[in-house]
Image (cartoon, rainbow over all chains, first blue to last red; front, top):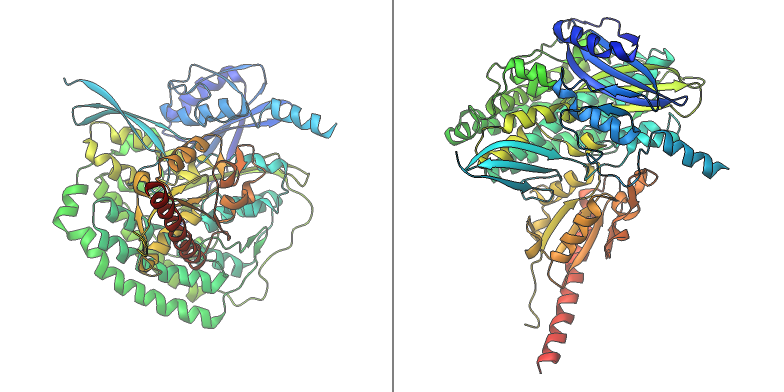
Length: 130
Length: 360
Length: 149
């Protein structure tokens, strides 16, 4: 029988100004960045930064809920590997992320539409329905 | 210090099966920096949640990538099943495991073939693909499709494997194993292969951890990370250990994948021995998903994360797929530093890039 | 050069496909299915290619690449769209970054259906492409002969 290690996932909702401290703390506890993504829910951005521990298989997600105009600090200073995730959030959702270490300036995917999954896309959708 | 120049590479290039572009800054023959630019295959698959309901998304999720298509479908279904809180029938779990491991086998054999082509062994490439066709035949026999076979559904699977088919699988696996020993010897022992792979593109254990690499790339550097340990599908009932090597070079990454092919054969045999005889293949689900879940599965290329979030409507609010190649891109950039220009094509291959996964 | 049978070279480019058709194109060229017995050969160089196999739909970024590859190929040339995505856009038709099938940017001669297209179907498409290429080459030669005479 294989050993099953599956601790319950943690989803922790935090304020945006606590983000960097929390990321630093997780990094010190030897967590690895697993993914980061944004979601546009109820006219707000929900950012999820997930970290994983490869020994205990613990999955820890930091959840930040912000207004669409709010600015978020980049975590790439602490976790350089988050570069592509943050560029993706910026380009597809239009999350205002400050100081990404390697900023593609919305040229990661080079898509025609601006922020297809962000606020603008849903505004277009309403127009279509109207 | 030599003069620096920038060489653009791709998107269409003979060594690349898929389009990716990177700008390499080189000094004489040595790569100083590599900046990848992606987006040639970006489709915007995650945006389809607005137009397709959660059942239809199963088929879209499968088409994220044609190589690990079964595992994409499985990961998505498991995530939605967690949101619903349903337990799928035990037989369905075993069937999923068998198909997932067949997928891993054909993916790794495909990669070994491409690697052989990368270092100029065309015969070896053909031999690997010849063996791989047998695995594809098994997939076609059991599901009806060679690569994309849509047998997953929310709550289980829609097709069963008959006892006669199990007998064929068992025989074919014996053949495949025998032939693999003959073919794979070249990868392990050949002198010129070793000179191309050994000591090239080293990633240390610390680098792998910092850069967030996943799958065989991480295991080749001695990180025993294997998401099958999380106990999805029937893996809790099977016996296996993550395969790790310590060197972190291209050769280790090759060995990890070779060992995993044999591990997959072993896992399929175990699963076939333990599969319960049940009629029911899928638990029906009612209503719409309400809630969120992060599901992690171990794909041939490593840890894939599926995030689904629903609010009780047929259309999900957000579906996110973080594919292993996306995580390994950072590792690739690091690996390419201070290597010879001639090694770059081969090094890009060693992370097993799946660009259509990466860009979705 | 009349009555000469030609052995065209294949160029394969992956548009925004899911990889399934690409792998099947390669599988069709490897010895198990062996499309090479019909006198075609795979090449990575558009300047020497006669038949263009394109898989997957076209998105905003690779539209230019596809056009450029097509223009680089010498005349006469034949384009084969492999898989349903290259034919119409397929399952990704409604995605925000997909313009449509390959025929939105270049003229397509032969459509091979399937998701993923089976090697047998791809071989059928390639055989048709070889015949069409022969026809076009003959017409081309005829024109050159008349022009030269």
